[in-house]
Image 1 (cartoon, rainbow, N blue to C red):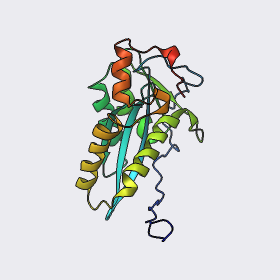
Image 2: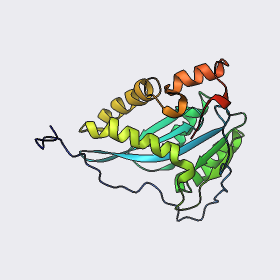
Image 3: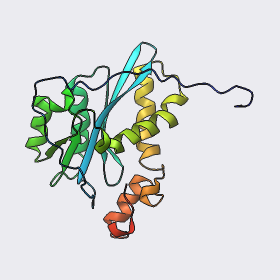
Image 4: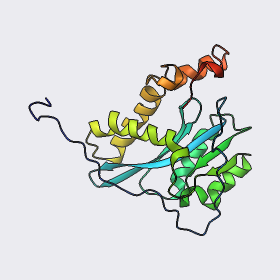
Length: 209
C-alpha cells in the first residue's frame, strides 16, 4: 500500500492543553532522579485531545510510573478542572494512595483549588515539572503517543460517544491488559503488577526507564 501511495496520512492538528500562566500555587518537582521501586509510588498526570467532527474531546489520564498502568482517566468536552478531577477520583477509588506522589505539569487544572484539595485530603504529595521541562512526565506522554498511533489515528471519530466507547476499550482491554512493554520484561501493565505484587519478580531484575 505504501508503494502505491494508498496509505492514509493521519491528521495531527495541534491543540494546546496546558495553561501555566496563572497565579495559583505551583509545587516543586519531587521526582527528579527518583528511582521507583513499587506501584503507587508516583502517578504521572496529563491531558491530551482527540478530534471529532464538531471539535475536540479531551482525555485526562494518570499512569502508574512503575507499572505503566493507566490507573484513572476521564473524558470531557472542555478543559475545565472537572475533567482532571474526574480522572483523579477514578484513580483514587481503585488504588492505594497511602504513600504516593502525584506529578503533573503546572497547568491550571492541576493547580486549581479543588484539585489540590483532593490531593491533600487524600494525603498525596504534590509534584510538578517546571515550565517547558516535560521530561519527568515522559511516561504519560509516551502513553498518549501510543494511544494516538495505535487507536486515534486509525479511526475517524464523529461524536463524543464514539470517543468514549473506543478510548475506554483501548485503555482497559488493550493497553492495560495486552500491550507489551520492553521496560516491564515484555509484559502488559496488569500482568506485571500481578506478578510483582505476588513477589514473583524483584525490582533489581528490571530495567525501568
